[in-house]
Length: 183
Image (tube, rainbow, N blue to C red):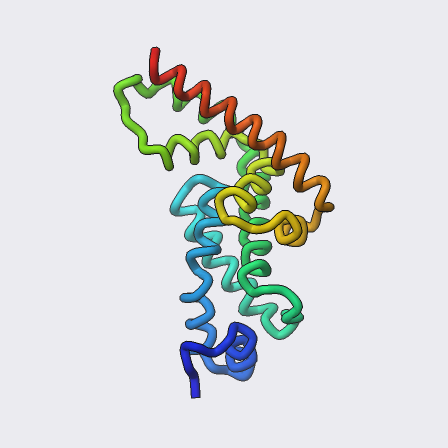
């Protein structure tokens, strides 16, 4: 009998044995985490939704090999981040994202109003991938340093240094945006 209060691990076991509703419950539980991770990485809702779908498809195919020694949300976030980074690498081969964003900023008039979330998202998109992924996981998604290191498969010290540099760059971009809006 399927119950909403079953653990992720129990639902995984049921899904492996063919219970589609169990897998659907897993998707419902974790779709927000996956969507947030991919949206913060790629900055485009349509692409983030596609990455979210790919994340759950990949998990479905590899579910039988999930070791249950990590939280499912951490595992799914790792898949979403990797897919997002792959997307960004493909995109960068066609054009430089930073230049495109800079051009888009200059076209907007100072009277254009952005809410804080949009301004922060634009500034996040100006960070390089390695800094953006650490800032997003630590500061936006609230993962610990250890969890971030596990998700990105990098040493804890690297997480800390990328977080510091990423936050410094983010502050610089946000400060530039504020100065731009005032002029």
